Length: 515
Image (cartoon, rainbow, N blue to C red):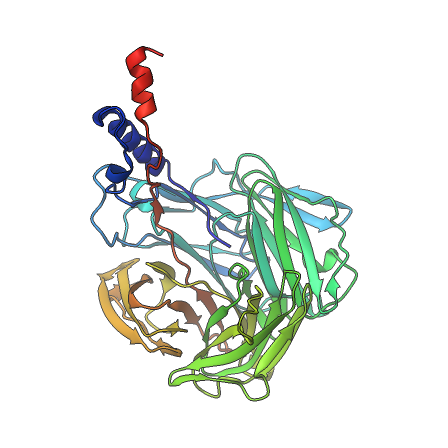
């Protein structure tokens, strides 16, 4: 799943370069060599983020944090020096059951922004209490668009939805996969769909269990209102109670941001973010050292079965979990593997690779992770994550309870980690780390000097192979080690400027003849 961003600036710059070249080059001279010297990438000019309605619990305390990192390179001379980044309430359409729906307006896109960001490098935060906090539709432009991220963190200290729920607000897309959802008794999973556009979107929802695809009550798709959100209780879409599901979301028209909110009796609640796009390998970073239960859920969406090698990348290297050397995943069927307390007191990340050379069947995957025991259990989810690439950021980090996990699955890598200014003050700081091949480095990240409030973390790959990252935020409440895990995703803060391949001399010839 890739966040969608647009860059009108890049398009204008590319067209401007073509025009200038056509005017300055003699008729008949190719422009390819000159075009190759153009700046290959430009910062994006606009970005969208979508935050789901956080909770239906009256005791919910939700914190929104918005953050754009400082640019890692000098600004481009044609780039705007100003910009805006706002998160505004959207409308909410509640789907009651398969037979109908009811609308509940929780605000409009024209309403007052919940959160407005002013400058890169300094996060801002807002707090909303209770069950009426709406879904948010956000837009950033100008110098606030590249790398913009927003975090939604909700603490619910009592009731059936008790837990710490965290999610990075998502970009809109046309497809998303959620292995690890459920319609089992005692589990309440809501798929939240948020539409950023001015026209409604039509969405198809497919459910896959251990025996294949389930029949659902939405054969004609689901309409998501313009600049609004629709939460769907998954158990209302099928008559089957399935403990582990893979949910596929696709759009017939428009695009949506999608995320699943889970709540499980006696275990807690959290958000399940989408898995990385189907691929032959998967990295699931950031399993806490004290995890008491880890369950892998994996799905092969193609026509071929997958056989995967399972490894745990820990601080000292990679090992194969006893009894789980490989896992076979049948096409179109959800497979689960109970890894129990696989970390054995050390932090780690799960690596899935093809068990046989040449058998590169794509899969999607996620982990259900539990800390604590009995009444003090708490749950979180770790989806397969793509590499952080050039740069990735996560907001709402605290001086206490924040852990950053970095995994280098194939080659030793050097990583730069920057802690931003705090929401209430503090000086940014930077540190560099080396992550050895096949290991996971988990640590308390740098904290801004004189920190007040929360802060943003930015991870940049300096050299070496790909790096995957996750942030764990732990906020113990009432004897429960409540926690949430967010994987870091490449922010796609720049866009490639296409090279000019076409010989434009024909345009000069036509101009000379007056055609």
